[in-house]
Amino acid sequence: MELIRVYFYTAIPDQNREPENYRKTLSFLGKLQKWNNWELRLGRIVYRNGVPTTKGVDAKLVSDAIFFAIQDMYDLALFTTGDADIAYCFEAIKLLKKQIAILQLPKNFSNELTNKADYKIDFPEKICSKRKKV
Image 1 (cartoon, rainbow, N blue to C red):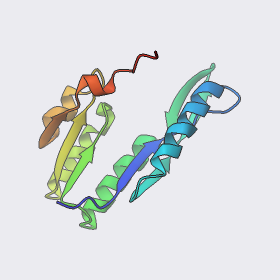
Image 2 (cartoon, helix red, strand yellow):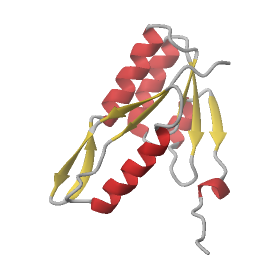
Image 3 (cartoon, rainbow, N blue to C red):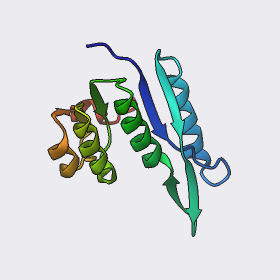
Image 4 (tube, helix red, strand yellow):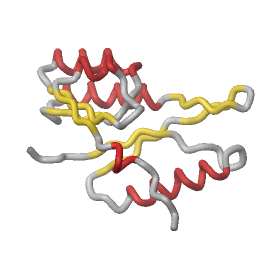
């Protein structure tokens, strides 16, 4: 199986409202830029009463996944998300005769997504846990 491209969907926090999250996000995205065959898809963050909410991220992911399936650009899509809002997208993709794998991160998964996926991959918790600084 050949990896064609990796799409990463996120939103960048406001630099003035969330300086630490902004810095961490840019640092992480900078590391991703070193990879081959990946593309960043940005949504936006809206602040309501000071609380950040992402907008447009799910819509872009769902639109791309279905569009690329219709264009026959993949046979299997691998998702790393715990957001059950995209569960219906999985059904649409499967109607297009494509397969879905979900990479489940510890403490961030949806049973609804898992049940709709063709394959489930459990990401080891020890890899996700933060390293202790010495």
